[in-house]
Structures are given as structure tokens and as C-alpha cells.
Image (cartoon, rainbow, N blue to C red):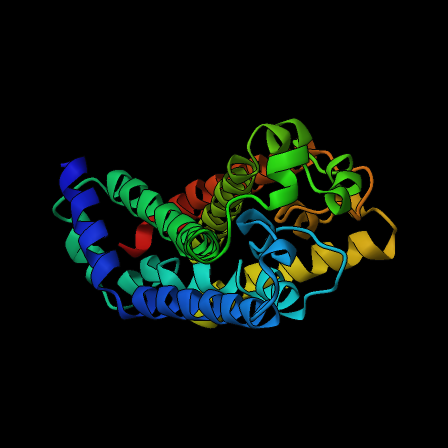
Amino acid sequence: MFFNLLKFEFNKLFKRREFNIVLTLEIAFISIAFICASMVLYKSPTSELPSAYQLWIGYDNANFNFIKFIYYLFFLTLPVCIAYSDTFLEDRKERVLNFIVSRCNKGLYILSKGIVVFFSGFIVIFLPLLIHQLLCVVTLPLYTASEVIAGNPTYDKYYLTRFYFSQLHTLNPYLHNLLYIFLDGLFGGAIAIFSYAISFLKNINRYAVIILPTVFFFIENFVAAIFGKARYSLIYYLNITSSIKGLNYAVFAFSLIALMIASLCTIVLFNKLNRDEI
């Protein structure tokens, strides 16, 4: 029964217009970001080209990147909420929920939908970032001449000492980038589950389910900045940065775990409170 529900939800996800639209827009945005970054390097001498891992959108460099700023501020929260998080509310308002739970266990239905919601949030973030890195690999050399001859390039040595997971970066910078792509995907999944939990609140509307997680994300980062506590600002954990001191990924991990626990508690509590509606 559970696997049939899971299969049904995955089929519904891949056929859903909102999921396909936001995933397409994410890939389009990331492709435009790649083209803009590549145009700057057009006709540059081969010796001056950066390595493919350094052009990845989440990789830190000395120059402010407006496209990167916009992507990490808006495109890691709002799209994952649009993709699939509001479907429980949609099923409830259209009375589809009554039809489904009359034929299966409601708990299994909520669990299967939650798994697919997390996957939707993960893939909407993970896939575009991975595609951006692959585009860089296809276009640029894996390692610059200076890296091949003398190790890390001179302009990068200072930054390397300030990167988190610097040992992994030294071992293989592409694995380092892939780790951040994976962490961003987990963040997207956690935000999607939080949005899913909001849909269990009574008398909530679809726009609140979609927008509230992004609003809370903005508030969290703003409050952390106001009080000078950058280490508690989640946005700084989503890309490779050397400009923020005191980052501790235990804070990031705890934040995601706390968010997931709060979401699960909300789902369980409001599911019990609203059980008479079905």
C-alpha cells in the first residue's frame, strides 16, 4: 500500500505543471548565469582562464556577483515551495483527500506525500546547481596551468586557508563543490517540508504556504545581520565563502534538524486537530 501511494505521488509530481515550470526556470536562470560569467572570459588567453570549479556559481571570489546574490537569496526557497508543497492543501480543498483516505491509511498518505515533497525541494535545487558545474567542466579546463605545475594558483592560496572543508577542497575541489550542491539540496528539501507543514494549518491559503518560508528565511538572515551574528545566517552556509568568519556547520546542521522536527510536530499536531474534517 505504502509503495503504491509513493508511486502515485511521484507520478503526480512529475506531471505537475508547477514542478516542471519552476525546474525549467531554475535551469534557465542557472544557464543565463553561466553565459554571463563565460562572456567575461570570451577570447581570454588560456593561461588566464579559471578552473571549471572556480566558475561554479556557488564558489567564492573576490568580486561581488549580483546574479549569484539573487540566486541564493530568492531561488533556494520560493521555487521549492511552489513545486509540490501545497498539494496537501490542494487535495483537502478539492475534497480529493476524503476520497484517498477512505481507501488507505491517512498516516501513510501523509508520509508518502512528505517524502515526495522533500524530494521535490531537493531536486529543484540540486539539479540546476549540478548542471551549472557540468557546463563549467565542459567549457573550461579542469585545472589551470599553474595548478598542474605548482599546485593551487597563487591567487587562490589565501582563500583556501579560509574555506570551510578546506581539506576536502585540497583533495578534490570538485568534490568540495559537489558537497555544497548536496547541502543546498538538503536545505531545499527541508524548506519544502516546512512549507508542507504550513499547509496543515487550519484556514491557511495557498499563497501563505508558498510565501511564508521565504519570508522567514529573509527575517532570519536580517535579524542575524542586525545583531552581528553572521554565523547564524543560513544564507552564508549555502555557498563556498571565505569572507565570513566563525562559520560552523554544526549550526547549519542543527538548524535544518530543528526545522524538520518543528515541521513534523506541526504536521502531527494539526493532523490530529483537523481529523474531524475528513
